[in-house]
Image (tube, rainbow, N blue to C red; front, top):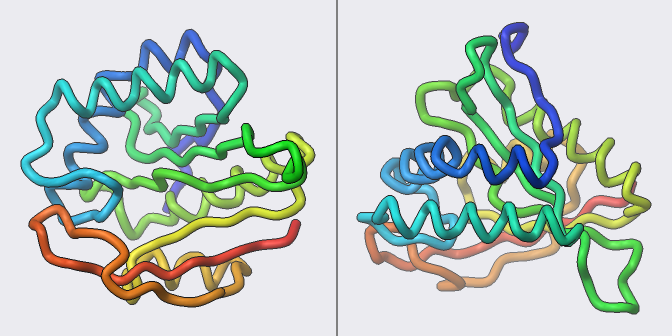
Length: 175
């Protein structure tokens, strides 16, 4: 149950203030085996630098950052909408870094984040969203249940945090 979880958009100043908490979340997910562009072990400084870059992107209006937080303010999930794309794609948004802390999973937080992402994308004038995820993972099932259309798989697209190859599945959604 997610009654104690608030999903909301954060602005540039707040995004910068959330860097440490978001770094903790990213480290937890990578330690748990999530293939989200980082290898294990993930140095805290590298995770913090990533989130500082995200906060800078929010400040420049290039991306939207959503967080899921508990009543006590602890961030347990996040997702981003990349809105700054080429001139011929003003209607499209890329979904990035859908993360839920391992200790908060199986409570509907990811589903809530994706519902909020859809609404945010509409508010931003986006009508086509794209994302990719590890083939066969739990997130793949989440996206299918949320109405995303599977495009296909690319074998050996990325590495898992432990160094092994993983295939990646691409999805799109029309809003």
